[in-house]
Amino acid sequence: GAVVSQHPSWVICKSGTSVKIECRSLDFQATTMFWYRQFPKQSLMLMATSNEGSKATYEQGVEKDKFLINHASLTLSTLTVTSAHPEDSSFYICSARRDRENYGYTFGSGTRLTVV
Amino acid sequence: KNQVEQSPQSLIILEGKNCTLQCNYTVSPFSNLRWYKQDTGRGPVSLTIMTFSENTKSNRRYTATLDADTKQSSLHITASQLSDSASYICVVSPGTYKYIFGTGTRLKVLA
Image (cartoon, rainbow over all chains, first blue to last red; front, side, top):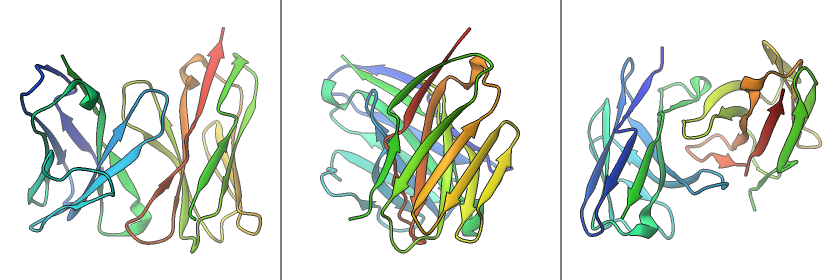
């Protein structure tokens, strides 16, 4: 159990366009999902906490108007990178948390975004 | 300041050898500590999760230890295999929605 599906696994887009990444919890409900970004050889960096039915909470330094998060249902959160630029090229990973803390949280397989 | 430091940053070992990865943290309060394995280009996969009262936990060839007094954890890999080549991330939770990530140890296992 506790499978998180992330789509797409990779995407190449032109500078100035927008890209949407989906994160789905397949066999459990997730009131909270997290979005991370990882640059090469660096650790995961939390971008925002996505809360079902309410606004996302963004970490300091993350532009909420650029990284739009929508968590409209208990099994789906989306991250939209708006007006993407080459510096947004990165590995984006989502994770979802079950209600009970001891289950920890499960990560998606990640999305490699390349902006050209 | 809540921090998680891992060492070494990178490690190269021969197949079949054992190795130990270290994680030191200053996170307070402490709820639990997790070790994740992340293959290149993939999401992290949980190896172990340990709470305050647990000293040792094993998952196949992976054995994690926790010393809550010294705020140290280690991940021991026994009889390494080529598929163990990955980044290993230590994550400490203070018990809220916050999770403090270590910078990871990149392990390379050579034939």
